[in-house]
Image (cartoon, rainbow, N blue to C red; front, side, top):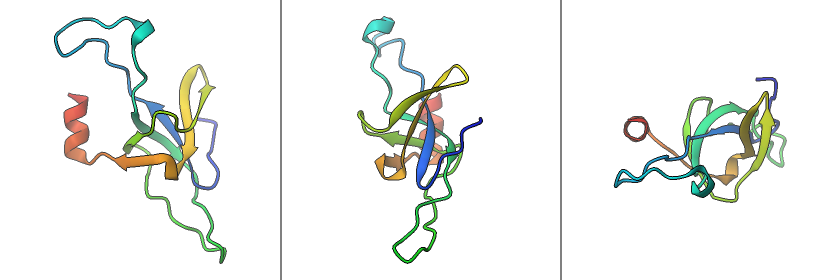
Length: 104
């Protein structure tokens, strides 16, 4: 990737949308909802406090995260659609067991 997020920004690759319902019906592309989760691709160094101290980031590359529907800004980079958002817009991080279940 040629984009390095600044401050407390995070670059995220959205998860693939569901193409089949629980009942086995295929969902057309036109009505698929964009997933509210994704994988962290890159993170900035962190924001600075009022005292100038660097506040560490809580997420890291490879983390699977959950975010709000209207969070971030969609960008196209090297033909791939990604999201860039502030760390504060991330609702939570999936732990290893949940991430493995979601991937299966």
